[in-house]
Image (cartoon, rainbow, N blue to C red; front, side):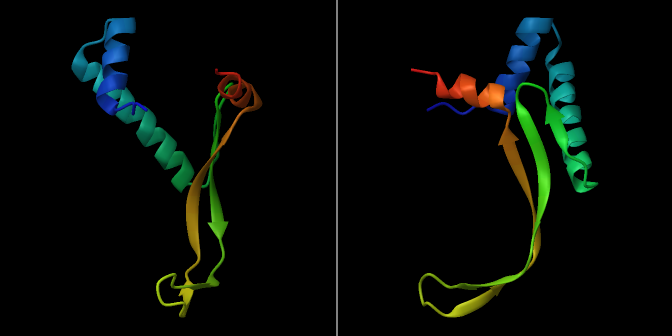
Length: 96
């Protein structure tokens, strides 16, 4: 299993579009900053054919410490989620 890193993305941008390394890294940084800022502001981020990032608000609840079994309060929190598009799920599901 391979992991795609920021460096891998920058290399692909340089190869495909002839960007300098600096410009490729700046482009990646701007894209991720915009996604993050939109999510922080409560906006969904949709990429056609890929999927949607959104923030879910989870309420506080009682959980258990798995080691001791002692009940513990799990605080309310906001979490980022990703839901792949139907097209993306079909492409991934059809890989052999």
